Image (cartoon, rainbow, N blue to C red; front, side, top):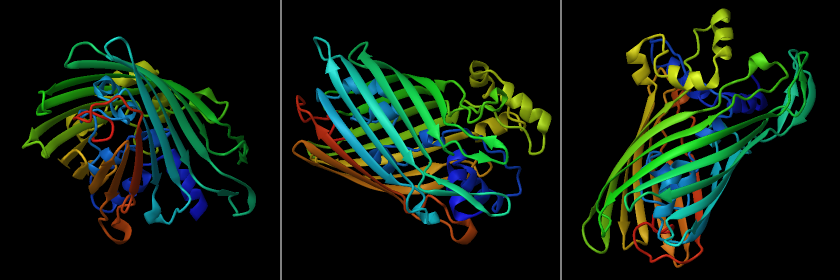
Length: 394
């Protein structure tokens, strides 16, 4: 496989790299649950990235539409805009692969208990040189994918929030190229999110919070005119909780944990053509429910399909934050396992967040996500009180 084609394969199956890593470390059967448009699984928030991808129940900020839309009305600021830039898989030498995201929200309603939000993800895979089976070049293209969504969220009480979002997904991987007799076209899909948030903190921001999200519930996506070859998008169930301890006016610390599972059928064993045809024919809604009981290895394998994120965040005077975390995925389901660190800085109406994935492994066992950086910028549109829950100090 040449260097350029590797980048195309990345978009088709982002867990493929880590699956190869897993094979070198275990003799257990490898059965990675894969989807199309895997860029939707990349955490687009530098704050969450510094906490091992924890974000479902953390305090509200401008990036809530990416993590748990229901948190948005709990921001104390009336509105904010956020931008994040993430170079992707630089450890593999892919210097022109990156993701850019933007998000924003504005509160509405007499009591500022509702919010309208929007967010955009853009994933660029760099320049691809296409070749045939003999290595002859016949065209080049720059694959790209994006999603755009709008959402509405509101408080049902001082403690409970709900959010819904509608998302459009576009994926153009081959630009109309004809490969081995098949012409590939851009794929399109629509999806929605349903989210829940419970804010159990007291007046000073201390206490437990929790959340639940069902995201990317939508249509399949296809890249040819063959309707039987459409792929599942990454529908996901997420559960999360945090506990915040406030020591005094200057110091507080938050501990968080998230659990996530793809609501996508487990693929059949390699070489099972009949099973693969049946897999592609599963209706979307049915797939969400059967994904919790279809693993060939039974209940124990279903448990291995959950990923776990743990994270810690420390704030000093709501102006300077330090973060760390750990992300775990079972070695038979992709083997993404890494530690993260991060920091946040607030100055006036601006905020900056940084995160970094600590290198792990070596040689063929090297984690391809090592050294991943995320840089996030937040601009507060005003109206906040500067206390816990504003867009900048989280």
